Image 1 (tube, rainbow, N blue to C red):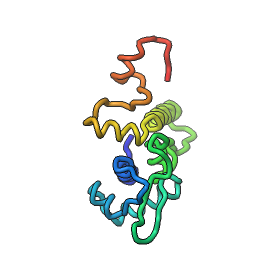
Image 2: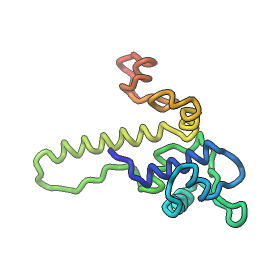
Image 3: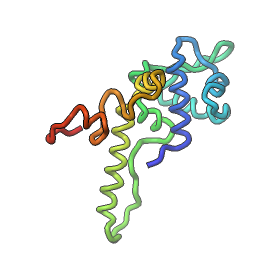
Length: 161
């Protein structure tokens, strides 16, 4: 599964806001400079995440964007969904396609796993990981089954996520 450019840019922009957290709005120009993202495209992306209720804006002198909720309450799945739509696997319907049903189950399962993983990573997690030099490969709130963190903390064969 691949995250779109819009999803990546939205996550980078909101992470920038979280890293430089303040009650004072940050201009699109400043976010673009900090992240290296193109300002015109960033403006469109910020409007989409604003529409999803993830950021608030203030117009005029001293205006810009702030997170609408604490970083602990904004996960990557919400950010990506704000710019790309719901994280689901939508496949064309085929009446008589050999193996279609089996493949459909795999695609939906992969999509569900990615959604669960992105839901487990918040902006607060990313801020922490950024400040400590990218420590850890997975989310700090919960680990995915099979990840090194999960293997180290959960060795029971009956546990599920």
